[in-house]
Image (cartoon, rainbow, N blue to C red; front, side, top):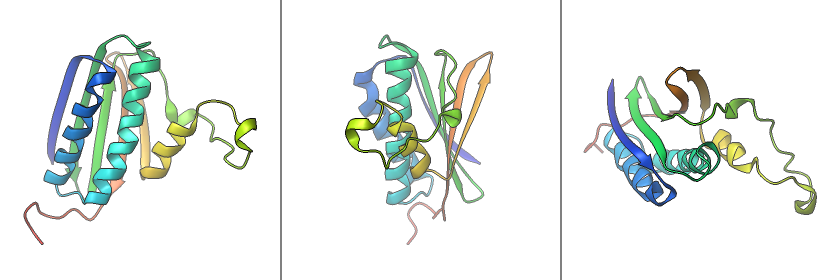
Length: 144
């Protein structure tokens, strides 16, 4: 298994571009397609934003990303030590309601679900761990 990792001990919203750039480069270097990279960057960006704004209440906090490629799967694991939150248990939004009748929030988690093949949450004494899975036909970097 190949993996690449990025950690910020005091991540802030202004660091989101660093996370997005890292994810795109890591996914492509591990054999993911442009489409896979785009989907994962959007999904993970939403989760990192939620962690920073809601989990840490807008204050700096540790964020780690690990990108793995193995057996035709891309996985991005997001680590934080914010308050426990399991997005896999959030109810799906009713996207058929008129906009004025929809409650605020929930669309980011919906987007994460739509852009990935699986979301897996785990809470340990170390904090939150959210794994994004994309089943992909990985190509060898530099190959056709």
